[in-house]
Length: 448
Image 1 (cartoon, rainbow, N blue to C red):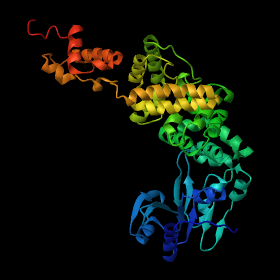
Image 2 (image 1 turned 90 degrees about the vertical axis):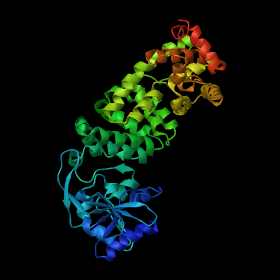
Image 3 (image 1 turned 30 degrees about the horizontal axis):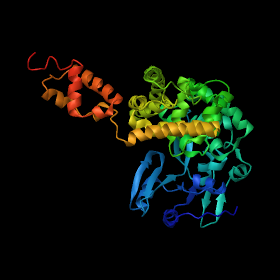
Image 4 (image 1 turned 180 degrees about the horizontal axis):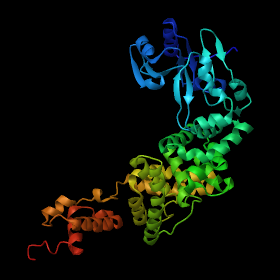
């Protein structure tokens, strides 16, 4: 089959270097699939008859990415790392990762792959596309199909269930009927997968697809949410639709925002952009609700082995999907910013806008924009919002004669509450007076 691609020079250099050394080598991977789909090709990988030691001997700069499994990284002149893997065949599978041995032909290597559109190999100098499983034809018909028996393919590595849903959503493919039936039967075994692999697939859905709603909808329809994320299994797919629309409206470059919108389902928040009372009492009430939401979300994130930083950030955003009070007093807005955290503000507002846009109502979107602008104005003013922003700190309290201890925190929290109401008192003289008025410095006075 005639097939045209325009690989970078360094890609051709790697292939030809191995070929000139006597090792049959083919281009494989996502670049071929993406070219057939009319998409930019940048995922260049190689399959070769050369063994890992022979690959490393052929190039000056290599990285032993997975030598035991046959993969060596080759560094091109521009610093790009390309993966070169020895032809392989599976000799044992356990539903997670296969035990492999080196094979003698590219056709054996292609036969072990998951889906027909990934079982393609191209040789630029021979102008030859190897397509033993009609992957190009399936792509042309927009069909996702496994290589060979779908029951066997999913049993070999259950991660293929999640990959199938991701690819179907990302490339707009229909999962072939037999493949879909086998996929549904395999869902109950997904708990065998490591949390890290499950997390990685979810983040690929959120970061690679322009419209993650398609793959996420398939997660719901196939029972994957019920199996892996029971906290997110909220019922029929239709009940999930508002969240899916919001995910599509959130920027692809901010996958943590998209993740926040999804995990918010775990605490039943984010279904609507609602109003709150514009007073301090409402903020205090909302804080207790937010803490409860964060606890549920953090448990889910920790189970999936997200980092502490990601867990803290996503939980903060997901628990704050109801916008700040509308037309509230500045002191109320300052207190709201204090509670949610300045460091989470940008992604919180991105999530608000995504939810508002998903509703498709211009008036609702404009209302959210007005609220965001009011909060941004406070941030631009440099208004003190945390204890660290106070003009008086622990070292100052020691100089005033107070012994270090838990009372320091109590005093500083009291002063912060005063400053949130009246930012103009954030200077040392006024804060010292407030500490005295609050009864904190009586015992430290010279006459006591």
